[in-house]
Image (cartoon, rainbow, N blue to C red; front, top):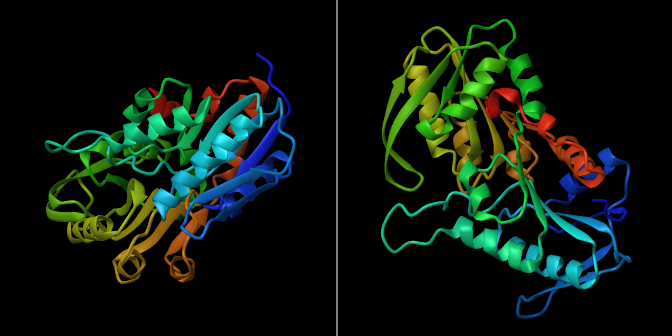
Length: 320
């Protein structure tokens, strides 16, 4: 099916990322007006003619999550009412993704709620990056492309591990598939940390499964939130005999004391993507290195728009 001309619009959550994505396609960002009423209500106005256009709406639902999510929904409603031909939501970071199931009675599945909100607001398709749980795709009744950041991050990981006897470490059982893909790409063994939580963001116990002694360890995760888990994992791996420890994570949430913890940790380097904009203290941290995934998602946008295959953008080792 052929759609109208390409148009890219963006919210306020990550304007630099949206600019890099649009620049990779050689197109200008569409004009829109976003403001708040005195009581905090969102207001949006599309300032370009988008009738019959194939619109890609770029917005990370990062902190403040609720404001950016509501901003996205209001923008989507404006786009649909402006008679866009198709609306594809580009979410580099999917907020609420960690609430993908009920772990205790009488709790919500908020990731499903967000999926419902996006669809009711008018999304025809969604493009996202490294979902916390792949099964979130099943919450949607529209096509979902969940790309991996590894094609963008791997060159830096290879440079980091060049000439070293490396081992890739998954911080938990749920991340083994992701870590295995990195291990295969740099031809390194895989280890895993078995951890027990007392409550969210707090680790009570860690055990390392696999051999890290005498190796350069790279911990692979989908996000870094408060960095408590990451820093404790790094200490555990270093204590098990690793010569040094680095980390790679797609989404730099970096809440609360995260940057201070990374600065004072045994970690040599933390490689992250620009799916979430860094705060000033994170940008100033010499241990944190940012790699842009704008061109990767930009290529996905181009292929979706032209009807070409998106599957080749996925790492084969992660599809198997």
